[in-house]
Image 1 (cartoon, rainbow, N blue to C red):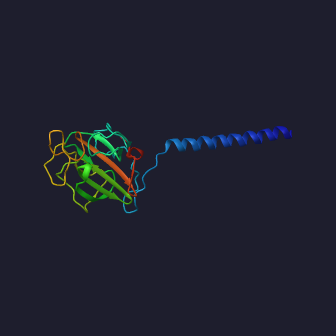
Image 2 (spheres, rainbow, N blue to C red):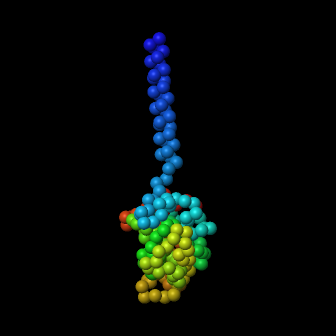
Image 3 (spheres, rainbow, N blue to C red):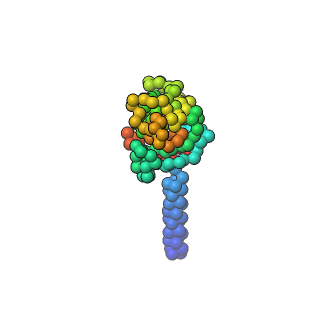
Length: 196
């Protein structure tokens, strides 16, 4: 009788252990790490499907990470993702934020930088016709600008040119959004936090 009781105790122990391990693995493989926004902004995680920075355009032509340089002046480490879209395509804010910068920013061309707590959201190769200004508070999902053209007006701060000598919107081979997320000033893979 004591053998049967011991068998039941061991069986129950292993059943509980199995259930615990199963639930742990299920949680581990189905949870994305949400970005926790500062208390003064939204507590909604950024991996919500309606928060894609370039609505209607989800193809990624250049992912985050190491790559071969697509053009002169471009980095071999891609700090964001490139989303091809025609000039004039609407861009939206992925979080409640404040406009930190609008202007020309090196290889990113015309750029909008939004700040939300320890996070920065960088929209590169945008239209030089800015519709937001530095210090402006931006709501989650609010339109902040448009994808810019490849060829832009000449500017002394813009050294980038195409093969015909035309000034380009930073280091670019075509119209697209270059989207970067920085956490504590370090670039992180946007696809770890956003879905589409």
